[in-house]
Length: 173
Image (cartoon, rainbow, N blue to C red; front, side):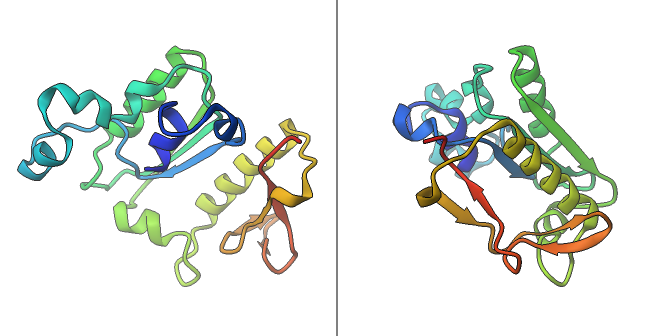
């Protein structure tokens, strides 16, 4: 859903869309085949199938994307990250794709949890967020969002965004 909100201009107003400064996707279905009966029901009729694919809404003007995927994922196939990454690059958009060896779909999602923190994934997320923040000059204190759950690696030590009251600003007002 988040990828569609980021990529498909029909879901959000232009005013709302301008506030999206980046997208982080964990093992997401961006370019999938519809071959299961339930998918045919959910995404049908056949003529509507293209509207279910986030990759079909890439125009090169979307905010920077960070796509994270485990190479052992059998639920969301590699074509999803490959297809979306390729389309964004073709249209000269900004995308960073990271594939983590030995990780499956559940591993990717649990890598952000406290008991199973994955330093490389957390570091990649931190770097992406820092790159976005360095490109933007965020001003509005009223639209700051605490990164409550994100714990990441900074200079080799765990850095807790919530504990240190760091914020990610979402607007340029």
